[in-house]
Length: 528
Image (cartoon, rainbow, N blue to C red; front, top):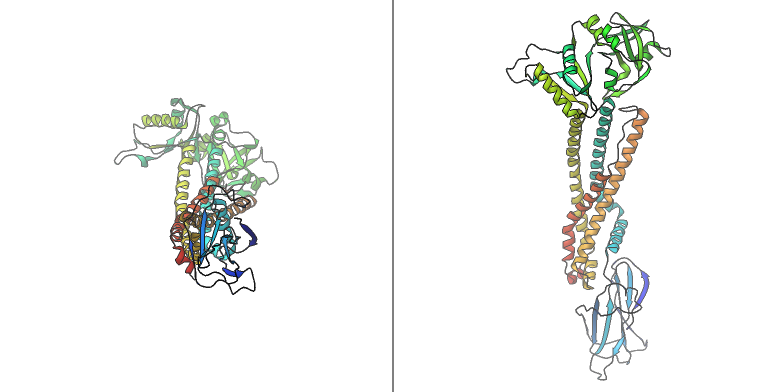
């Protein structure tokens, strides 16, 4: 037999009517009497039907028998015209062929109709799912809104967390990741333990560490002198950041000089009245005039400007406000005594920061009589601690934001249940034509996954756009640093969010898909 394919397009799963017609218009009004139809058990032929457009696909054969218990009085054959729709959207027109006519006028005439229905593949299921979204744009958008907001929130939180971690790492690296800090911290001692008469760090502690700890390359004592005003003529800078240190201070902090020179050992040994100033101080006191060689007044003491420190920022503090003087000058001419606030240290090349910190800690425990009154830290360890805090906060916030994905999943389940109800007749028709439960299940799962993943992709695109806008604004207005704050797009997190959103769609779409696959075809076809 032959199969004719009508090249018509129609909406999915439209079941057209079955009509009777006679070859002879002058016939006696068609077949009389009742008829019975039955759909026999599917049979699989050994060979594909020739010249059939779907002959290269796996197919199932259905045997439809129609019996007419009374012959046509005109002697003509009665043609049954059966039309139905098979996804994707193609009408197959299957005119029956007369196979056998019985000589016995009372015997039934048998028509044998065989046709094939190609099984729907994964690509076709995706195409149909996208077509359903296109047909219900507003409903699909409202359903995806929860997923869009959830994925966008998670991605933005990861971007912000990553941006601040990158910012902090760059700041600590700029200041010297291997720089160590030694501070007096009596709060670390045990209850009832005394400080051994010590109440601060002194220049003697600096000398002890520099000589005793062989793992240390550079050491510099630092004292901060707050509440000072610096003047030049009638110009005044009200709140400079006054630091007193030695020749190693610039190296340990990785500062750059615009002009002039740094402090020398001779300046420290002689308590010279010299200083280095930052760019902001220079601009306020001298304007466009050169500052090198000029005398400024700090706390009633005249200081010769020997260098200009290039402006840089570290965790909100700027070197533009700095005035750097020799430590011995501040101790002898202002404060008195030999106290220092903290000691900066740098390990020798090849020595790990952890090993150098252990060596310094052991030396200071010996000096204090085994009293835990000192604290040793490094830029690297501080950066790691801050990164852990920011990373942990980011994970917690991302987890909270991910709860909106559950809300989106509930919305997807709701709309898929509505879709199953609306397409009950389609499901019944497909099952009547031999579609397996697994095919129905797959179709609705793919639709739910496509709905959720599309929402995830939209959410990621919005997050990427907002991140780029923030980066451009931060560069334009110099937020956080002169170079702004970059929010790198997390590719790994974005892919994970998209896959997770698809998983959410499949999980919440599983119940509607199972409900659809369990529908009885006869009951489904009767559904209004």
